[in-house]
Length: 184
Image 1 (cartoon, rainbow, N blue to C red):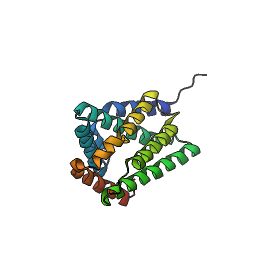
Image 2: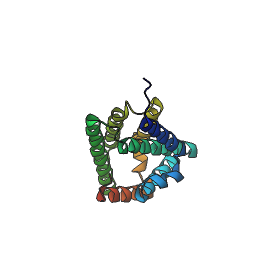
Image 3: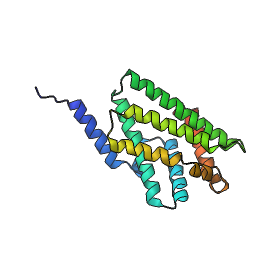
């Protein structure tokens, strides 16, 4: 008997369509205003740090693609009980990372790149484990690309340095709002 699932086919089509559309301008259609503002600031930080508009665009595009695909998988009920536990761990670790980033931004002389980088690496590993059986190796590479970029200790040191004060302030404002609203 031929195995055919219209639900599976629809899910594949939705993921494919959304991955083709993902970009900074399209992100506003799928992501709330505060998250979009944080993404825009992360783009500006990446662009200034790498001195490369295409590299910064690629990192944000990969981030949006991954976020949308994981949201589609979650909304479609594709995660089993163990994977839902992993998703919860990922959310807790991401929340911890956001609170740590805020603390480092608000309290002078507390920043430690290794601590923040470690939290981001843990988030990457949990997310990779979560989507291991759901997304393609190309999507796994996107996850690595995004987390490896933002967990770079030199980038983090620059972000918390004097040249990026304005960007850091806007990122912290956005993270605080997302935490207060329970979206992170």
